Length: 230
Image 1 (cartoon, rainbow, N blue to C red):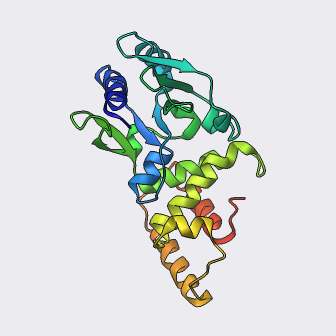
Image 2: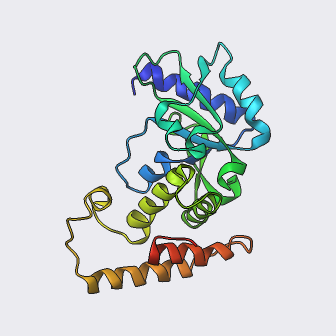
């Protein structure tokens, strides 16, 4: 991202933060923070539903330089979790496929700032955003999946993100990108895999979860064992 564009993203996110709007990272930003080699073309931020209208007005201010746009074709192909909310591009981004800011309603993804830790903004370290804690993020993704039918396209972002987080952070595979996309290259015996899986499940069993999230722990473990939450 060139400096002028980075500065425009800093202005946009800073003005939201300065108006008391908490920005919670979602999507590829979170995956990258855990070591997964994600390429970020969309900066997804979860915000309170009640702030969506205010945030849109702030971003479309001429001094901020962002315009609200229709979801991209890629977002539309991945259902409501990628398509929903509000999408913005900077006037300084002249690429055919510009980098976007995507504001996602909290109610859509079951996350709030209480489920996250405060970290530096990727555009301006003088400002802070929120990054979901691993247990709460995994549980929120299970909740998202539970909202939609098994074969629904609306499940795609949640199921993909959850699988990547499990492989990268819970199963602790090296080279997680390779493990996700070239599974035929097996270099682990069944005995070694079962030991890794057992350790991963033990980790999840030890997570400290709120009472409201506790019923989803067993669904997550079932997903780890069977690739299904139902």
